[in-house]
Amino acid sequence: MLQSIETLQDYMDASPFISGCAMRITEADAERETLTVAMPMQSAFQRGADSSQFHGGPIAALIDTAGCFALVMLLGHGVPTVNFRTDYLRPAVDTDLRATAIVRRVGRTVGVVDVDVYDDREKLIAVGRGTFGSQAG
Image (cartoon, rainbow, N blue to C red; front, side, top):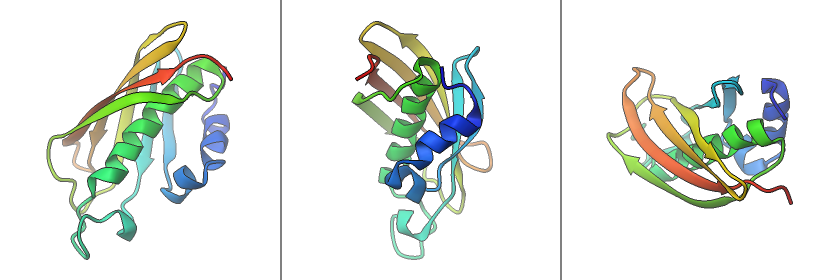
């Protein structure tokens, strides 16, 4: 199992997309099956020029990545996204984001993870659920 934050972060940083989003793992608890990922606002993430409001795409990417790496932490290998959904609850304006992924089930072929996204003021911004392949290869 890839349990250390450093090992997981190195694996994340190997992805040019994830690295470019500056996502950082802030907590990883294999026993509780939870993982938290932070993502700072970048000008490229804005919904409109000079709006300081996150576009939905980076929020969805954060949900997908946090869910994926919660399973990587438990399984010790990469997992493909099969499906995920995002429900946006309120705008994320003038804030960085934090996503907490909770593994709900790891089966023989798929794993299911729920992800909550919060702003700097601890307001729930979005929720998501991802289904990921769980087999290596």
